[in-house]
Length: 151
Image (cartoon, rainbow, N blue to C red; front, side, top):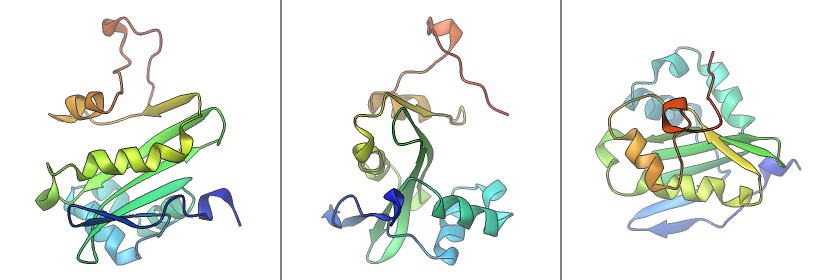
């Protein structure tokens, strides 16, 4: 069994939302969730999306009444770095704490990893959201000693 095949916590329900560790959603659930947030770059190649999720280090899903309403996933070398890759919450379920809970739960097994990084769009509210979770924006104008590069 690979590290990322293990469940890192038992299913837990909070405010009517059940969170699960490495219990992967079906193909149709994934496509519906990614489409709901407008991430068509992912859904235009469903096989690549499935492969990416299956090869993630940790995936946490949020369900309400059995329906997938959110998901977060990370990739990692399991020692020095963890990359928060995707955090998605169905637009009809946003602003209820689901995204924050997903981030906390997906990163929990990586508490001793040296660097936690993420890249995100510059959409309104995202900076405040991630800063509320303890992230700092890495930008030369903010006096940071690191820069983020994306291709």
